Image 1 (tube, rainbow, N blue to C red):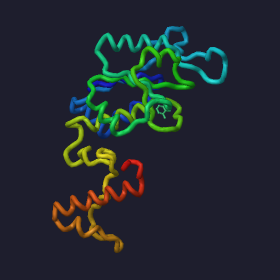
Image 2 (cartoon, helix red, strand yellow):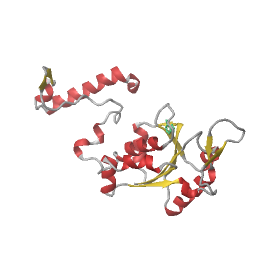
Image 3 (tube, rainbow, N blue to C red):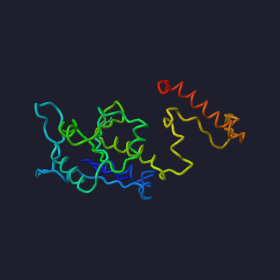
Image 4 (cartoon, rainbow, N blue to C red):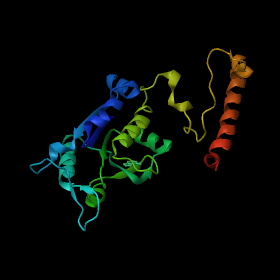
Length: 224
Ligand code: ADE
């Protein structure tokens, strides 16, 4: 998979990709990530990529021309499955969207700032919009990092077997069961006996029951 991230704040997005799973996925050659500074595509002498909103009002709007030029440049090099605009009013990110995106080959993540992008970017240049939740961030960069992380870890070969994504919460619309490690007893707080029994079927049953119980208690709407 190849991911291009378009941003006016490249530094903000570099660190999540230089550590842990996103770093490993790149080192293994499974994913390539390219952060593009939108200012390179600014056409005015001050290299600005935003301007006042027509009709007035507070807040700057990101201009269409630098974004269009940047996307055109990228499209000349490869074909994209999706050009995604990170926006609080986009489709809410779920595990199922992450699964879907993990099957794609080339993605662009466009990060907005200020009051967002000129509406014509949304109408004519992007193919979908994703939000990471009902709150407004200062920009799309952290949201793009969240999407990239959620997606990349699902690509076969990125995670080792022991951290397999198949047992994650939400992967089967259930919350993951509780987990324990040594010591088996700490300050009198004990690990459930079944986990120490060595009985694989019973452990599997217990985990499934716990998943169901947790989902009922914490996120009942997932069971609907
Ligand atoms: N940009 C600003 N807020 C955002 C959000 N909640 N999700 C995605 N992009 C955003």
